[in-house]
Every structure is written in C-alpha cells, then in structure tokens.
Amino acid sequence: MKAPRAAVLAAVLFGLCGSASAQVKLVDKVIAIVNDTVLTQYDVDKALAPYMPRLAKIPNPKAREEMLLRARKNFLDNLVNRELVLQRARELNLTVEDSEVVQFLQQMKKRNRWSDSQLAQAMKQFGFTIDEYKDHLRRELLMTRVQQLKVVSRIKI
Image 1 (cartoon, helix red, strand yellow):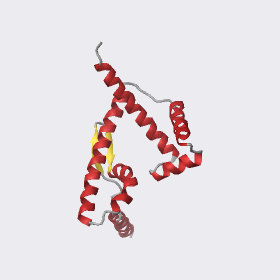
Image 2 (cartoon, rainbow, N blue to C red):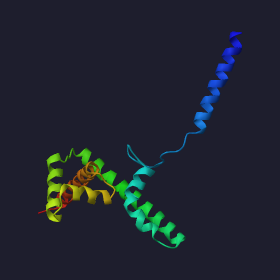
Image 3 (cartoon, rainbow, N blue to C red):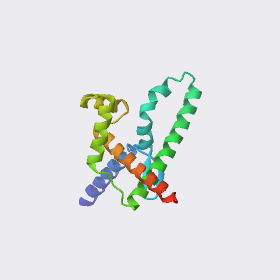
Image 4 (cartoon, one colour):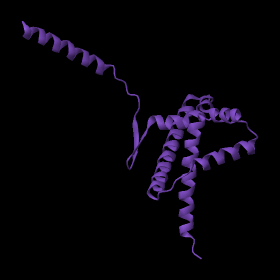
C-alpha cells in the first residue's frame, strides 16, 4: 500500500515541478561578456530608456525599428567600452571618494541654480534616482581618470 502512495506522490511532485518550469520566463538575456562582467539586455534597455519617447515619435515603423536597432548597437558598444575602462581603473586601483561625487553634484546644482528637489527631478527625466546618478557620476569620474592617465603617460617632454 505504501508503494502506490509513494508513486502517486512522486508523480504529483514531478507534475508540479514540470508545470513550474513551464511557467519560467526569460527575464533577462546575456548579450555580452566583458572579461568577467556580464552585460544584459536590461543594461542596454535601461541606458536606452530616456531616448525611447523620441524614438516612439518616428512615424515610419520601419525607420523607427532601424533607429532602435542602431541605437541598441551603439548603446551596447558604449557599455562594453565603459566596462573595459572601468576594469582598467580597478587594475590601477583608482577610486573616487564620496566627497568628490558630492562636490560635483553641488557644483552642478550651483551652475544650474537647482534646489535638491530640482536636481532630483532633472535626474528622474534621465531615468535616474539620486543614488543611481551618484553611481553613474562615480563611474564617469573613474573613466576620466583612466583617460587622463593614458594621456599623461604618452606625453614626452
């Protein structure tokens, strides 16, 4: 009597596992691997998001699709290049202090005569929260440092 119950239980569990895996959806897709870093479709979509309203206004569907494909390729190329530079920054042990990021934000606010809420609103238009923008700034400052080192190393006096 125990064997049939075990068989029924195994069949039910197997059936549940099968239906669960049938409902699994692809949430993200790996589109590039840069050394040890994975870049996903989500990364490209997030970078492209602020430009989507403009692309959506292109009246010709074929032209819109071509522009979207070209934009995706360009954004992927940019993400790969950015990741390579950031990896080089890590190799060189370059860092950006929190105080540098805060100082940059303060200068930006002063230059544009923005309050904290106006800065947050401006960042929102580009698809960033303040914290995301700080991370973005940190990466940009690191990339600038790598490029400066590259230029300085080529200067011969």
